[in-house]
Image (cartoon, rainbow, N blue to C red; front, side):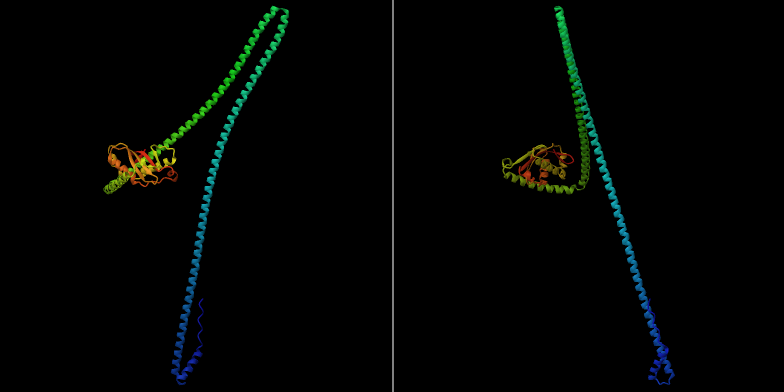
Length: 428
């Protein structure tokens, strides 16, 4: 609150002061002069009081403005604190939601892992049970075979004991009969011999039948095992054939997609080239002149050098897709891919529309990636196409240098490939 205005001085004192001053200026007995002095004093006092009132009002307004500014600052600070608190709570909610999503994802992955482990354990358990069942069946078959063989041996021993007992009784009977009559003994001995031969024949027949049964059982088991192995082999072959067929279909689909992409890319490039033929022709002619000059210089330099075959360089010749040195095959494939994937087909697109045969070309690459020579084993039949192939080979230099392991063994690799042109350059 603004301070209260000061109280005005008592009028008598002012009048007295004015009277004293007036007495000094005017004669004491002049009433008009006293009234004028009193009026001036009253006017001065009124002006002073008005000035004090204005000052008090200004101070009160300044105090109110300061209080309003302080209240506005406090309100702004309160709103900023509320905004920061809201932002903190929103960030906390976002962090909580992120943690909950992460926990849910972790729980889902853990459930998938446990399910995979459970299924793997179930498959292992099933395989173990099947193996146990097969082992149990095998042991049961072996046990039955052992029991059958034991029974056969017991039967054979019983028959032999019966034969021995029969022979003993027959001997006693023959002895008593021999004492009774020699002729009867002779007849009995002959009958005994016949009986013995019959029993022996029966024993041998029983043994032969037992051996035949054992052999039949062994053959049955062998046929069953062979049939099982054949079934497993056929199943493995069927699965391998199915995998090969699936791989072939996947490769065919990938090749079809690649060819379609190449066809679309070729169509797009053809459309773009139709707009730039004039400029490209000029660039091609300039490039052809430059490459011809470079080829002439290289041919001259090569003619001045001794024949590569006469040099002491270590050379590797790759005419197919295989070589004992895997590093050479990897390098040759990388070189072929560079020729295939770089946009060099534009240089021969129009030329290969002429009737020609696929040329066979040998390119010799030095260990530093430079080209030693380009030799045509079989020409395309069109000189312009052969020249374009030379320019393509030299335009991609330098090629990758040999890896240190390869450079230790080989100085030059001669790569022989058949060049085929359709929507791109393909090396076979």
